[in-house]
Image (cartoon, rainbow, N blue to C red; front, side, top):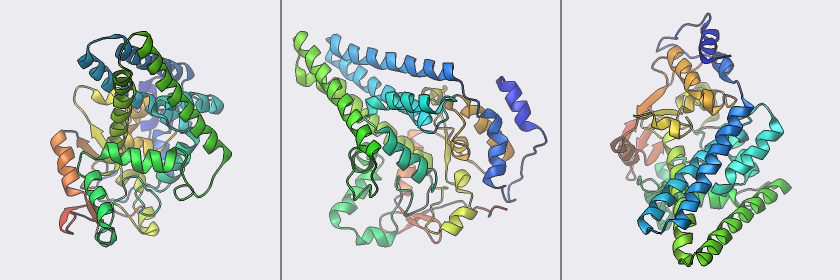
Length: 372
């Protein structure tokens, strides 16, 4: 079924729901975009193979091109490509990449290798916790804002760390420490109370890939008579830091916005249809969103995780057509991003206000009409 057929099939009998009226429940809304949950094995494998080849070519360029400036540039681009590979693995982890469950597990693990992400641990933290309890304080831990009372009770070092995280420059540190190190890579019982054999196996797989990566860079540095430090710095450290900053920034802008609400009451959270009201559709000029494999068409992804990334644009368009004014659609600019970082420090969960670190109100979230 081609895109035009999908659009036609999903439009039959549907009319936009005017602003001010309650939105339907999730089952109804998912039905609107269900025709877009069409998975294609060949396309999925081709996307992954292409990105893997490009990533290896970038790392090879770091090794064999002598100019240091070029090495640094290629290292950063390689970090961006880790992000692209990760987005493919993210789809596979949701079982939305191909129609084949076991194949998705294999492809997802391969796609996750350069980001050193254990597949099963991401699956629990992202699919179960984040998607199951999006923006629900105490459950969804990703960029969950503290209340003023919580912030004031923190030790000074932790307050300072929060200031760094939410400065606009902190996503690289935030993701590396709070997500990858604490919850993804051999997590302690403090951060992952339940344990499974597969968690350790996937962590070992990620560690093994990291060691092979570092060993290969060292080997090629020696045989090409180059500095081992330079090759590892440009071929591993820079890509890995760029990747952490990229994913930290992506998950921040997905669910942090002056209009986005956070909740600490589950009943209120359920009434708010959080898969729509807590998710931002960030738009870009010059089709840059396609370079991110359409991960920024994020409302559609939260409504139905079964929609593959190569169908998200059409699914997002359908949601915005049928829920006019209900979906937060934000044109991206760096000035917007840093203004958001300035406004969204702490949160008043009762009154739905964003606060600065002194407790001053900075922005008021959208009040959601309870669902039917």
